[in-house]
Amino acid sequence: MAEQNIASMTPEQKEQYWIALVAEFKEKALSLGKIIPADLSEDPSPTTQNRHSAPPTPSHGSGQSTYEKVTQDIPIQKFAYGTPGADWCDWSRRFEIAVQAATNANGRDRLEELCLIWISLKLSDEALPVYSQCPSRDTSWPALKRELEKAFEDTQVKRSWVRSLDAFKKPSDMSLQVYKAKVMGMVSRYSSATLSDVTSHAAELYNRFVGGLEGDWREYIEESIPFGKETIDNAYNQALKYEEKLRKKKTNSSDLTGAAMTNSEKNALECIRHDLQELKLMIQADKEDREQRKAQGKSPWE
Image 1 (tube, helix red, strand yellow):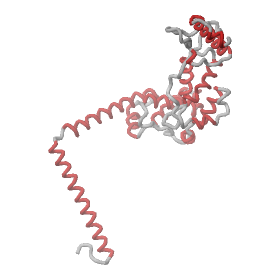
Image 2: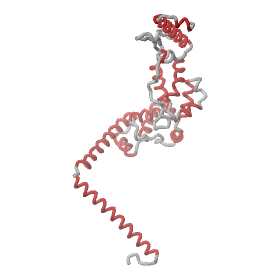
Image 3: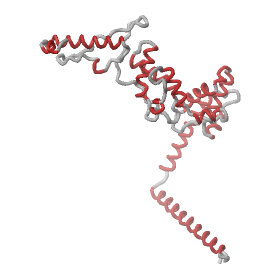
Image 4: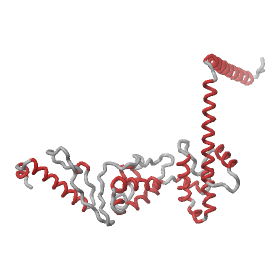
């Protein structure tokens, strides 16, 4: 519509014109498989107080009318490449679920297209240079997933997996629940030959879970589980018990060292530490003096 015609419209005619224009734009955008900008999800007419978006065009791919939602973000944390426990396979599955929930993508093809659009915004700064080198970053989500899985893989763990049961050690800041899930995922990936044998697979899960823990944790678990009951679930339950035992021990120790001592007792203890430090320095000086006398051919005891 020509500019002069718009200028000559009444406020009501302008409102109807903008609503029709937005509806036409949305229909074309959906037919082309494009995302509708968030700022066009409402009626842009400045003359109405209660602005409503024009009805979007429904898709009929599955036999039911579904509407793709406009979103400004995908509800998932960025993939933390390079941090302990970062698992691309697990994260990418959750990313797909988050994209589907946020956009209501209609069909697998549309979901994969949206994943390609959003993925660069959900990678950490450390991961972006890796992503930028992937040949499929603009063409195929399944291919891009495979390329990033290979690029993000912890090569150190992969190299030592066959040679050592403790190839993947539990990071100190990782919960036992997450650690268990990581072990199960790594066994499926690196020990896939055991998947066809239930007994071998169960033994591999147990050994990898226990092997990645500190020595005192391993001893507690192995002493607590009877022979023939070595499963990852039993090991996980015993690890939880040992974790609670350590927590209580730390709490009790803190109470004893803190509340049991008065200020005068703490001052006295500090004086003793100071005297011990001085005594240590005197002994060291005497030792050096005797070694110097000995080097000069003199008796060290003169």
